[in-house]
Image (cartoon, rainbow, N blue to C red; front, top):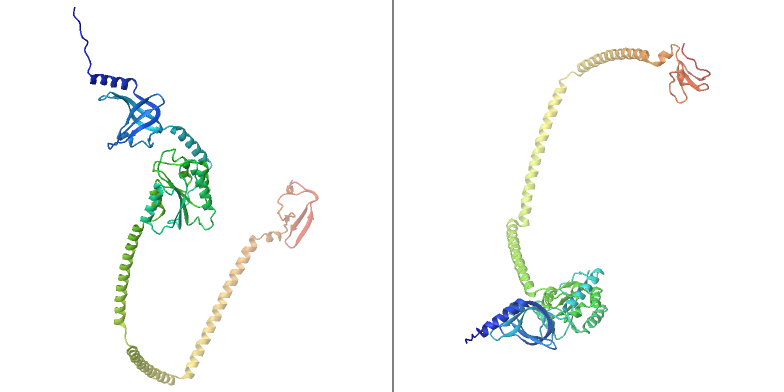
Length: 448
């Protein structure tokens, strides 16, 4: 009788089959639990145990996924984890390969955040966008006195603008008492008359953290207090990816506390470089101006003469003009004397009596010619006038009236051309060749 021994699997083969079965049949799942034994070796991976009150499972969060997880992942934290069920073959350890980790209750917090954000936005609480003074005369910081945020802000301010006048109002930035404390401090600052909205700024800031850690900055009353603040407010809460209702309500948001400090004050090194640049430009401009004025001064100096020399030159010119004037006057006087002598001789050689007779005869002749021409012109004009009068009289309606006809007009001055246009009892005016008549229509007759 023969017996056959079944073929046995190696341990590695068994683990491999178990791994394949788990990955195929279970695959990717979401699991709630409590973190414990969180380990972060130098490789960047995160190893931990996820447990509840009755069981536990080993988990691994590899480095390429760990950098996307914002949850702090501390022992005792309640989390919601998404991962793939697998098996670590060398040791046969059943494990969960984590793909994403969220703090437990995160979904509810986010939903509450979105609801409150929509409500406040609809009320106009996020409408502030006042310009901030740059740099502010006084910077008022609401933050934790021992947190990393205030250290970062002060370090940046010291490096960029040591002249900044900074006042820290220490307030809790986490927990139930944080929002009331910040509201109270903000109200106190707004009641101080010495603070000027045109020159002073309030900075509300803290470092990064989980959604629960930053939840105080999502307080509805804090958002309203920021909106109603008389002083302009900058908010810098958490890291760049963290956005709170305080950020929306503020006049300006900075992604980090350090970035807030950079936006609030200028960079002294940049300003120094600008001042050096402007100083160099000013020096070059001054040097060019001095050189140009120096050349102009040299030119004017070369043109400048002693006043005595100038007066002597003017005196010589005046003497020359006087001599030319004397010669011109003497020459003109000599010419005028010669002309007068010539005219006197011509006058003496003329027979004035004969000239008078000749001119008298010439005047008489011109008068006779003028009288004859005027008589001829008058006769011609009278003849033309008589002819025009005859033509005008021939076409005048008055000439027709002179032959016994009359023109009838109604009381409005309209000419009556037909008996049909009149009515018995109507008053008419008759224009005769000489004079007018007022008549009354007694009866109308038709032409027969």
